Image 1: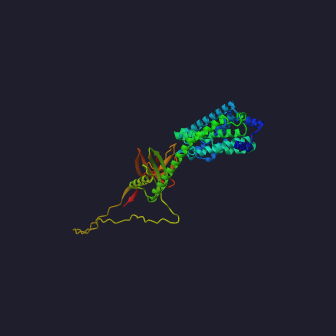
Image 2: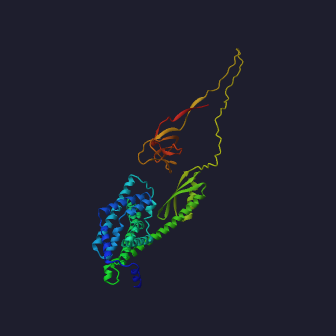
Image 3: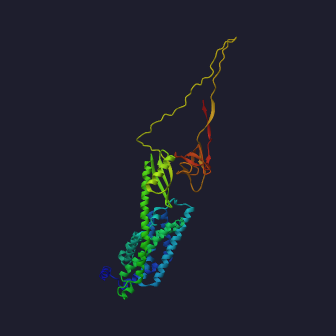
Length: 462
């Protein structure tokens, strides 16, 4: 009893006129009108683009524009004052806004799969950050809901509401649900849904608690200091949410520890390979084993035995079966302070070929007979040909380190290139070795080439 009186003295109840004014101010914001739905569409569009482009600044802008905080605050108020109509309107507004945001983000991401305005080779970090809710997110939502409700009851604190909107982050989890559904990543959609439900329930409970302490509860005033049933129910839901959030937190910490071990072992073992540097690593967990694809940078290619030894060392380090694939990117290091050592190139020299020499024979007419040496002949030696890239529309044509290897550049239609005479067959296509205008040497299928010069020039060979 003493603590409750102290809190009431610290957060003094509002007068009847002040309460009536605040209720009249919050009630219109809980109705799902045109303005509300328009702001949902605009903020969802901004948040979805910010998520797929991995832009935190764009996502913050969507948080400031999103109107979802108002109906949740109205639910907390309605549960305290006992206004059934207000709670119905607020719940309807929240449900309509959430479904509209999920649907719009799903459509935008699904269309992007066929018209790739943004290339999604892997999930952006901003999307993954909203798929692993934890008790920390629950505490943030509780604090944000209390701050938002208290700021609404104190006009001089209304400037704090934008910061509360950023902290609680209601719109990005909804957009993450749509992104996960469009990419068939139901684990992403499920984690984002749990984060949104956590934020919504925690904010509603926190705002209801503040409104109760500010004197909005008619039931509490009539029945002494008894807590409203709605407040007890929301507090119970918040406590129940701690179970899945704690599970996600423990699982996240375990995964983070395992990933740290994998990164440490792979980096150490790749560093032991002569002149090799780890560039990228992709790991997929499959039934107790790891499907690992690593990209290394080296100036001397690895052979089969070295890759097998690397796989054994990684397995011994992490104590799990590993299926390893190594992509090699060949490089050459040049130091401007150390000029390259010139290597003499042997030049062709003319060597006389002994042949029949002039021979003097004794004949009755005493006439010497001579034999001449053979004359030079011409042979055709193939030289690199000039060609240009055929228009490939979408997607753009890429140049690869080797047939089926990593991509090292993009070629534009009509771009002039030099074609060498090295050819290989891979996946049913004939690949040719080329050099682009920037001097990069790689491979592309020959069906995308159009020759513009002869393929051979005659040279004289003695």
